[in-house]
Image (tube, rainbow, N blue to C red):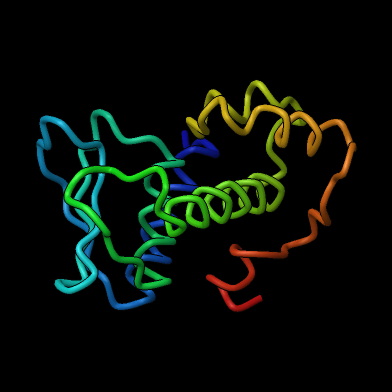
Length: 144
């Protein structure tokens, strides 16, 4: 039986391949996922990666983001942008598949970081709710 999680993973993988990138699984010991824009490759650990992390790597690939340092740099504007767009991508997918109207269910399934809790609660409760009709990153990725 397929789940919304499987459908969203399929959407992310299709989006990654749609921009000419490859996606490979590897037992990364310290990373859940990483993108190499020069090699057009996303590598992920299927045992640890979340939907949010995979969507974020898709955004990095699509927008040709580059690292400023070897380590993760929270001050890098590409990270901030990728996080926001990954969240929107996942919300669009969730709406497309008519996911549960429960914000906690969404967070549990997608692995969105706690930093976005207020935005997610607002979205699901209608406070500052954005248009949920196939908009944003999901539309762009699938050409709707």
